[in-house]
Structure formats: structure tokens, C-alpha cells
Image 1 (cartoon, helix red, strand yellow):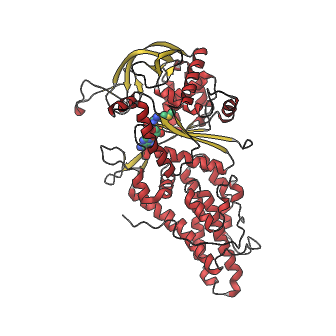
Image 2 (tube, helix red, strand yellow; image 1 turned 120 degrees about the horizontal axis):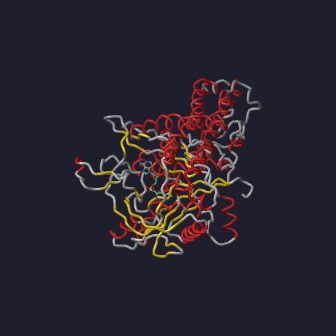
Image 3 (cartoon, rainbow, N blue to C red; image 1 turned 180 degrees about the vertical axis):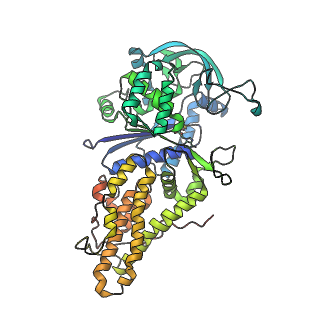
Length: 534
Ligand code: MSP
């Protein structure tokens, strides 16, 4: 393992008190696809996800449920772990901010920031949004409008809910000292924030000036206490961001932890939604710089999933009150887990807000999976089994004995695909694979294997065509693996290539001519049964 380069990728840690939903599943699958892809490219991947369990919001909901905050959090964990398992998420660590390792890391960072002179004690007097766990200044606050009958109230500029007035003693982080270093970071490493639209947003925010940040609370105690001022608990976002360091050994005792930190940090990619980029692209790198640590390679901010209003054709924010919220279960019931992953990963452009709809899910599933990929597999395996006695034909002596359009399409495919996958352009990467799949379906129409099978003089050509089809399937299965691991593994199994699943050398696995030939082939049931139109 040690000689493989490290690739460390994270999801946001989700607030424990809201059930996992389509949006949180989206962040998680996005990271999972990248983790799987990187493993196939020979990286030693660490893929982290987990839960954000402290803060006023969690403390309040625990109280409403008449439970201690810890018991309340514990009761909510299985909903996340179960859904991630069902969605085939391959995280190799699951962090909870209530774990001891998190307390150690957070307290260690407090000490480091104090020693380095980046914190000071003062008092905070301003506004706080509990649902968003965010501070707002007087000038940012929205004032109520008549229409909403909220006169006289102070509302959150992000979510519109009433704000709480906070006046308390607090420790501050000298965020204002980092305006120039941050602007330099964005200038010299534009890839630090992707896509560009988010980078521009972050830059103009920082150019507008940075204020020091209140990073401790004294009016409740559900959080990590400061090591040198016990009546303060750490501000929940400050705590949460540190999880990315905790999981790779920061602040933990022992040489192993130090070695892990040296090997894994900085992370290559943090996947986040566009709503939390200020925390990840401004506060987080400033915290790291203050602590004398490297900043991560990239924060990739995806858009929001919007539900397409069938009447107006426009995307609307999902919400329970609008009655348009879609639960992960509904999508899984319709498309299966693999169809679910494929749809969200390839049809929603990751950097933009994606308008999703059941109609479009049907369309994409039927067009790409049932009619193209699934159909290619069942037709090809059926013909192979039928004409070659349950086996694949022998490998042709030469790849160019006859015209071979599939080998041409497959030429260089891994390079093109990998460039797109690495840049989170999953739809474009999948389109490369679909080009091969479509070419293979056309090849069947053009070569007419059923006609070749009737003419003993064409036996070589028949073997050549079927071999090429199986080879295209083998390669496409490898490339679709990050999106649809189960069905891709099953496709490989049916052509006796299951040992190749989980390769860490994708380019070698996808080299044309890798199929041994002559091995058993199993037709099996349809991998993607066609959906009836709505
Ligand atoms: N706890 C913080 C993150 C701390 S990370 C150090 C948090 N948690 S969250 O539970 O609210 O959800 C986080 C993720 O879900 C974000 O990436 C957010 O963008 C994503 N989504 C929530 N609703 C969404 C959609 N409708 N669409 C896509 N993603 C959305 O914030």
C-alpha cells in the first residue's frame, strides 16, 4: 500500500438531527464515485464521511425529545449508516464529532492557535441563526416584510427563519488577518475552489473584507470545551471543520497517528454543497494557515438539486412545505440503487443546480441503461452462448483481421474518461462510455451475427464480431464501475472476468484484447428491466 499515492476525499459531515435526504445522499455519492474511480487508478484512497453532532440545534431537538443530546445523537446514527450501505457507499471511516478523537483534535488546535497568537477573548453581541448555526451582523440581517407578517422580527438572510440575539463572552479567531493570504491562495491555486462560479463568489466575499469570528459559546454546553477555559464550548462549525484533520491522526497520540497525518494531509478533495463554501473556502483554509498546516488541494462545490415543476418547467427548491420533496427511497424503488446512482451522477451537472424529475429519471434509465447498456449485454451474451456452446469465442489471431470499429472507439478511452472523471465531469465521462456502448449496438446491426452464423464459411468473422462485443462489454463494465458497481461486477462475472473487478490499474484492464476468449459466458436475466412510461 505504502508505495501508492494517497488520495484523501471527504464529504461534509451531516447534521445528525435531520434524516438523510436526497441532497445529503447526492454529496455522498458524488464523493463515492470519485473514491472508486481513484482506487481504480492506483491511488490508496481514504474516503471519509460522518456526522456533525454538537451545537445548539442538536441540543434543542434533544430537549424536545426528552433525551440527553448524546442519546439523541446515538439514536439517529443508524439511519445514516444504513442508507449509505444501501447506496453502496465505500467510505472507509465514519467520524462522529462526539468521538474522543474529535475532542482531542479540537482541543489540540485550540492550544496551537493560542500559542501562535490567533485567538483572543472578547464578547459577542449580534445575531445567530440556530438552524443554520451561523452568525450574522446587524447589516446582514433581513428585516421582516409585511407580506410575511413578520414585522419587527430579525430574519436569517439565508433561510428566512427568525434569528436569535446572542450576547455572550466569546473567544474570537483572527480571521481578519487572512484576507491577503486567502486572496493569494485563490490567485495562485485557482483549482482550490471549483467550479469557477463559486471561486468568484468566494473571492468577492473575501475582497469585501473579513471580520474576526466568534468561535466559542457560553450560553449552552453541548460542544467541546476549551482546554483552557472550560465554561466555553467550541462553535459548532469550528468543531465540525476540524473533523477532516481528526480522521487522519491530528492531535492523536502515538507515532502511527503522526505518520498517518504526514501521509494523508493535505486532503486532495472536500466535496461540499454550494451553501457551505464560505466555511470551507474561507474559514477552513484560514484556520489551517493559522495552525501552520497545508490547505487542501480542492474544495469542489456542487449545486442544489431542484425539483422540476412540470407546469412551469422551472426548477424549484425541494421542501416539505411545498410538497415537492423526493425521498431517496422513492428513487430507489423506481430505478434501483444502480439506476439511482447513474441518474444523479450523470444527468445532473455537478457544479450547477440540477432540475430533477421522475419523468427525466424514466427517460435516462430507459435510454441509457435498459435500451443501450442492458440491451447490449443481453444480446451479446445471448449470441455468444448460443453460437459458441455457452462460451466466448476464442481470441482472434489478429485484432484487425476484419474491420474493427469498436477497437477504434475504445482506443484512448481511458485517458479521455479519466480526465473527465478527475474533474468531476461525470456526465461527460459516462458519455465517453456510452459512445462505446452505442457503437457496439450499431456494430451488431451492421455485422448481423445471425446471418454470419448461417454460413460456415463465415465462422471466423462470427467469432471476431462476438469477441469484439464481449470485449466492448468488458471495457464498458470497468468504466461504469464507479457509478454502478453491482451491475458492472455482474456483467464481468457473466463473461468470467469477475477477478478483474476492483482493479487498481484501469488503463491495463481496459487495454483492447484483454479478454482471454473461450471462457464460459452466462446470459442471465436483464440487468436493467425496462420501465413502463409514466
Ligand atoms: N453540518 C454541516 C456541514 C459541516 S462540514 C464540516 C451541514 N450539514 S447538512 O446536513 O446541512 O448538509 C450538508 C450537505 O447537504 C451540504 O453539502 C449541502 O449542500 C447538501 N444539501 C442539502 N440540501 C441539498 C439539496 N437540495 N441539493 C444538493 N445538496 C444539498 O451543512
